[in-house]
Amino acid sequence: MPMTGLDDLKIAVLSPAEVETIRNLEKKLGPTVRLVAVESQDVLYALEAKMSSNQWQRVDTVYPEIKDIQAFYNEYDDAKEAKGWLKGFLINNALNPKPQKRPIRIRQVVNTESEK
Image (tube, one colour):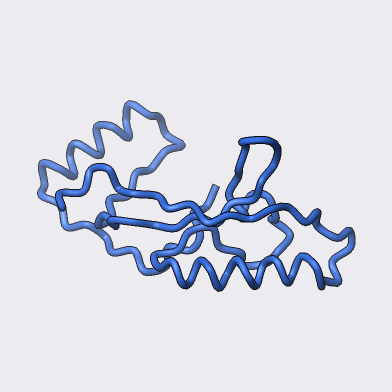
């Protein structure tokens, strides 16, 4: 499943020992898994659609028919703008069949391992 909305990720600079640790973990996980090291973000904002009571899912998985939809944003204002666009699109679109309109929320995802 691709992660979208994180186009400005920066690849982490790792020591040879850290690279070796990642390679060893990849070997344990199997041939279909590759790990990528990126610089940590303190906060991300996830756009989620309500599937049922207390069950939310990323909008890119709920609405795969909407081209280039993103689920994660680095800035709250960008997530808020995307939420407004998505709500408007779900009301006024020409897709057939029309995607089901669902409640949309912005959830703050905090990096609990941040050193700040």
